[in-house]
Length: 109
Image (cartoon, rainbow, N blue to C red; front, side):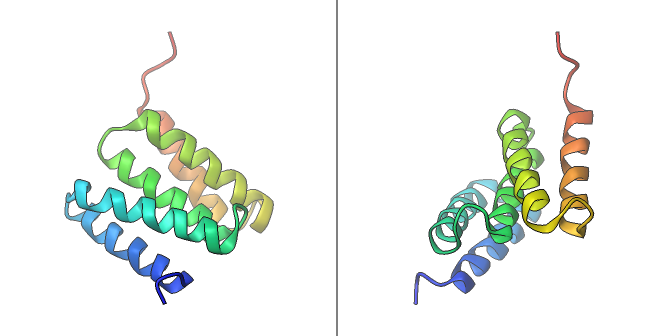
C-alpha cells in the first residue's frame, strides 16, 4: 500500500538519486514526503526518521542552504544518539555531516 515504510524508503532513494544528479527541485518534495511518511508510520524517535532528516539536510547542504540543513542534522544526530548510542556508525556519520557543514559556515559575528 501507499502507507508502508518501504514506500518511504523508495521515495528516499529516488530523492537521493535526484540529489546526486543535481535535480534538486525534484528531490526536495520526495524527501519531505518520505520524512512525513516515516514520522507518521514509525514515530518521531525512529532511526529511519533520522535518516530522512539527514537526507533532507544533505539535499539542502548540497544547494548551499546551510541554515536549513543545520537544524535537520542536529535533529537527526539527537535521534541517533538517543536510539542507537554515541558510537553507532549512523551516529558517527551524522556527527561528521554536522561538523563538515559547520566548517563551511562563516564565523559568528
